[in-house]
Amino acid sequence: MNKKRMARAVCSAIFVIVTLYLLQRLLVPKYASDVVEGNLIAEYYEEEKNHDVIFIGDCEVYENFSPKVLWEKYGINSYIRGSAQQLIWQSYYLLEDTLRYEKPEVVIFNVLALKYDEPQKEAYNRMSLEGMRWSVSKVKAILASMTEDEHFLDYVFPILRYHSRWNELGEEDLEYLFRREPVSHNGYYMRVDVKPAENVPEGRILADYQFGENACGYLDKMTELCRENDIQLVLVKAPSLYPYWYEEWEEQVEAYAAEHKLLYINFLELTEETGLDFSQDTYDGGLHLNLTGAEKITDYLGKVLTEECALSDRRGEAELSRAWEEKISAYEQEIAEQKKMVEQQEISGQ
Image 1 (cartoon, one colour):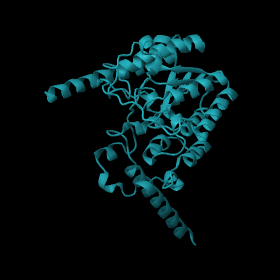
Image 2 (cartoon, rainbow, N blue to C red; image 1 turned 180 degrees about the vertical axis):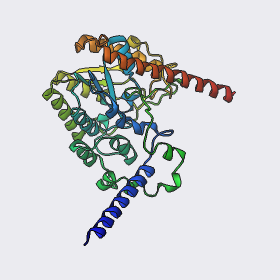
Image 3 (cartoon, one colour; image 1 turned 135 degrees about the vertical axis):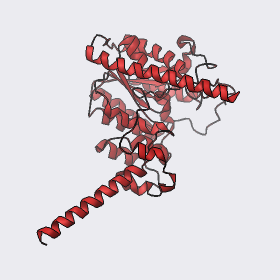
Image 4 (cartoon, rainbow, N blue to C red; image 1 turned 90 degrees about the vertical axis):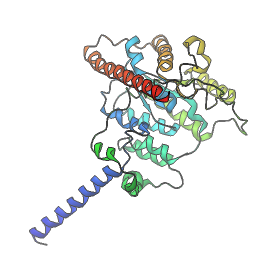
């Protein structure tokens, strides 16, 4: 092959690669106006990595705790690495991934995920895994999470999974082809609207209340990983009224925390201490807290972290304080925007 033909072959190969890359960028869901939770995992990588506290877990962390409150009231710099229905093995590998970039003093894990002992749904897997940067931890997370109908190569080359999405493409697929607007505040997904908790269903009787071997095994791995890195692991149960939290589950978590000398906080038992009012502090009938509810329990958590985990107040650090000034400004701006939207919806509903 002469030089001219070789140059043509190289150019053709580059053209094919670039074309496939652009097609993949176009076809992959943008999670911009719908199911924005799909953007949460990826946003972490744009942050400065000097956090005191890292949260890991499902919607019970990213909708119920506000890092802004931890900073503003206690000088604790925190970030939430949460995603929808984040399974415990996904939390574990996200923690492994986080330790590639930083070593926090405290890791907070929400225990609801212990109810799942095997992979669940591809859609939730994608929202937890696609945003991770490639590493051995991501590979292991994918392999541990795939359902029977999923294929590893579909994660390596998402175009294989989304090639039929042509008829779903919209303006935002072009608008966010190369950029994505942040949807969270240090991983916190804000909602200011109110829907009181009414007629919350009781838990149905289960055939077996024992947490599964796989889930418990990953909790052991998480505990060991934190100990190896001199990190305090804190277990929490967010005050969501549903899914139902069984007393049998509570007993297992309490026993585990006692055995491994871990701090465990069940916010379902602290409604009086935190001041939670489920007629005002939830936006979806008790599944998740709204802004006022999240700020209340985060305030309580900040006191515990300061007293029990001896976290320092970092508000005297000039550079970090400047960064948080910008974050708080964006936080307050979204509060105003959401409240305005709620008011408009109420007016139009009348």
